[in-house]
Image 1 (spheres, rainbow, N blue to C red):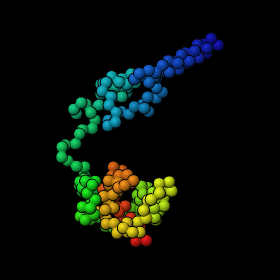
Image 2: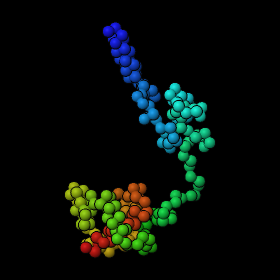
Image 3: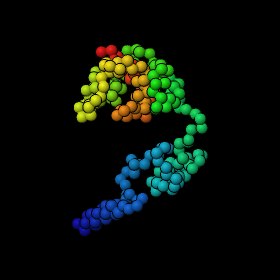
Image 4: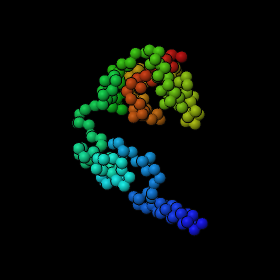
Length: 205
């Protein structure tokens, strides 16, 4: 009986010690491998080579939690891209450079580089439903759930909105206009052009 009591007191003591978290010490962890990944991760930076050495099963001379890259500056895992380079994409699109206040220029010169196929329209509709429906509604009538609170969302098939060019629509999606916020940071260029294709079908309804 005394032995079991001693085991119980020991377990309680360990549990209380694990709760003693302060500063950078988070307390003892159960199955720490579930919290700390061994591979390099760009969003974590553990530079202490002894971190996790007490449970490491590796034979590389460092602790299991160490995940920095000694070959890069500042031991960072991800390197800064070379200057004046752009990210490659399947369509080889360059970054969009027409300024936000140049919508008239965009309206005149921009042409949609993506063909209006059934697949593109289907993808455009999916993206439209995700990003545009809350304000503009399913049929582009300006009657989405947000428009019930913030009145004045236009219908695509009425007035001057029916004649908006593809460049105008793309520029507006990218930079926003009036009460509409910019969406250029939420969608890549190809996704914006697919929405343009779908919006053009709503203009004709």
